[in-house]
Image (cartoon, rainbow, N blue to C red; front, side, top):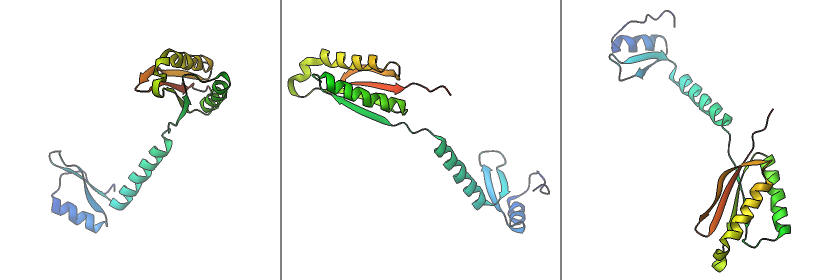
Length: 152
């Protein structure tokens, strides 16, 4: 396209040149004075745009959140079992959402639930970073833990 001069021409001339070169006249900047147009193959332009969007989408990191559910009176064996799952999730790079679910009148054991989540956070210290400290939301006390960055 080096033979096309960069000067201001009328729309009729531009359309005529586009049809001669088997290209499309595409308006690039409609708000400029005068509007800026380009002679390009529009289908190829759209194809390239879709290709770029697909490449950008493929490079994005998808964050997966794994959930661990505890009760306020969770036993030591169950705690250790879920702790091992949390460790494997964090090693795989997932986020862990640990929550204590208070059913019925067990809401009176809020302190036990918070102690349980803090104990979990302390056990996962070397594998992850606490994103949100334990917080009561309705009948759930929720805590988020994200995986530590791996040094390559």
